[in-house]
Amino acid sequence: MFLVALSFAYFSKTLSGSYMKSTITQLERRFDIPSYLIGVIDGSFEIGNLLVIAFVSYFGAKLHRPKIIAVGCLLMSLGTFIIALPHFISGRYEVETSVRSSNSTNNLTICLASSPSCENESKLSMWIYVLLGNILRGVGETPIQPLGISYIDDHALEDNAAFYIGIKSSPFLLFGYLLGSLCAKIYVDIGFVNMESIRISPGDARWVGAWWLGYLIAGLITLVSAVPFWFLPKSLPVPEGQLAKCSPERTSFIKESPVMDHKYHADEQASFLRLAKDFMPTLRSLLGNPVYILYLCVTVIQFNSLIGMVTYKPKYIEQHYGQSASKANFLMGVINIPAVALGMFSGGVLMKKLKLSIMGAAKFALGTSLLGYFLSMFFFALGCENAKVAGITVPYGRMGSLSLKNSTLFDECNKHCMCSETEWDPVCGEDGLTYVSPCLAGCRMSDGPGMKTVFQQCSCVAVGNLTASVGQCIHRESCQQVFPYFLALSVITSFIISLGGTPGYMLLIRCIRPQLKSLALGFHTLTTRTLAGIPAPIYFGAIIDTACLKWSHKKCGGKGACRIYNTTAYRKTCLLRT
Figure 1 (tube, helix red, strand yellow):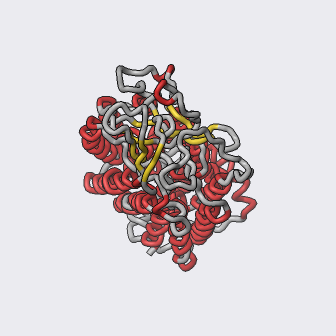
Figure 2 (tube, rainbow, N blue to C red):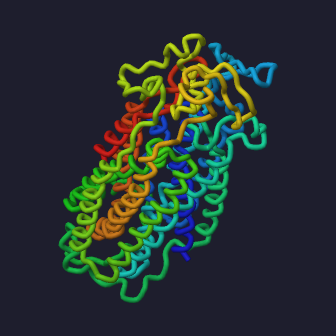
């Protein structure tokens, strides 16, 4: 029963967690903020966890673990609802555009500079609510992993523990990405705007999906997940044969414990004051275990690369291979995440079937990690050229190449227009080039509503009828050819690396004294989140920002979200740091 309840709790926490990852670009565009700030928001979950993890892991192991997990689920639910709050208290999303309406259907104001007023721009940054909600979500998530895993390990046969842990952590990540894919297809203000008037598609860099909807769904599910834990006992009957002594190999890893019971009995009574006094000596005893310290160092390095890559992988797929946010999340959900889940589950099964010892589990985890990272080097060969944007990556007229450092948006063909170089309202010319705006394409007239708008008399379009259509050009043949190989390699590396996840976790809880199990798991979580979970999204985001070629600009001044990246620099900087 506890395994079922814990699996549902894991489902709810991974649903909201993976959904947060899937909405990275949606939040970036909605609140018009750069990637490094999105990294701060994403890392705030770890900050919330960090605030209480050590105390929850230590004191929680002595108290009623199921009820503490129930309280955590309630806090997670509240935090998830707070994340969605900005949608309901802020104004409607305003799409950045250089075209202003006029009285004539065919004469939109195209060839005149415009300065949008900043009077209606909110002085309070709405992303602060997302940050605070994510911190509270991190506080609520704290007891689930250390207390849940230690509870399973205390009441399961040693050979079955790895299998159970593999089950509880394997299958749930994909649902968050699938939910993200569904919500990304729905326009953010659906039901409040005339969709026929919207001149952007889900593949546009300005598109924002219904990011808030998924948080409401995840919050409700998390709220329900708290219910079963209120009815579970503090401890369960110990299975027959469970009180056997430690194996000689395991005993050799545990200091000051040549012979001891395999499991820790949670029903032992102790005063809160005594527990507090024992905290520092217990922590010193834990940190005196060299195997545990070595495992900490290895996982901190590994988690830095994994967290950074997972956080921004959908964004990488969008920007590098020209996919929509919806499709990128869908691919992560149906291809990448199942490979991770299968790897973690298979690792637990293999450990049970092969009856791996502690040293066997260590060698297995190390071997799979090294093989996975070696295969990751082949991502360098799966490159994709930059999108052809006039004045940014290629010159006007498509003759030759353009230095990205010396790019300019103005040319002889658009000098008759008073264009703004800060706006991003891309159009695709008949010549196959993307222009930053209809004005910079030299267009004088337009015809048709919404996505059917056709811009005419575009002097910078050198061929055909001098027309341009809404949105970026999508003709990048080499990207379409390379993309399937990228997906295949991504699946293989994800499976191999995650294969060692469960054996590695079992190494962690088998190399320390049973009484320190919850504290060891909690301190491991604290360390990896402090040194990897918090900084990795921030510095990866800052690195990604350096590859930006065109930024949006806020109404009242200041840099907003990135609209287009140098894909070559993006790929190299990300892969070199993984």
